[in-house]
Length: 228
Image 1 (cartoon, rainbow, N blue to C red):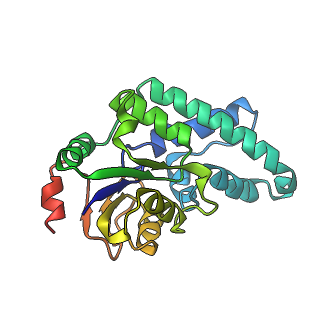
Image 2: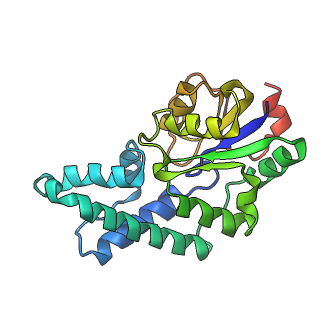
Image 3: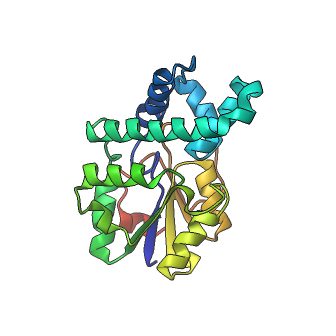
């Protein structure tokens, strides 16, 4: 094992319900749109990965007649949503999940390289790292694969292949840490072993093929999991 590859939303931090969902609703309200995503609805919408893609899927569902004209509006709404999300992060509304900082430190102390593979935008990632880990937090990661650097989002393996290529590592030399079915599928499709860390929206259904299935990283040391 030479590297850990981290997902962000739901894995490094519980960003979805109190971060992205809130930011989407603020963007809807500001734009005068009669939409509000509650926690349950947002959980359903997470089946579509990527914020712009999720918004486009919702638009198709809520206003099919308006879809042909929705492209520019989706881009504007998503950009404004990202601004709201960054504001929430800077206000301290979102922190790292329990055990994450200890794992980041343990990986560094073991000499393991670390990277990020996520569908969220780069601004979202760097803001979270800067606030929760300090301005040098992003330097813990050799590679940050985020947003639209690849054309297909998870569960496609593209983002993992992009990260692996830039790290110069083989899939079996890494361990992916994910919280969702699409994330697990993306890593597995790229040949990367996966540690599942269940989050608010993961659910209870079994997810096959993971090296371990944990409720959180708290109470589980890196050495203990690597020994499995």
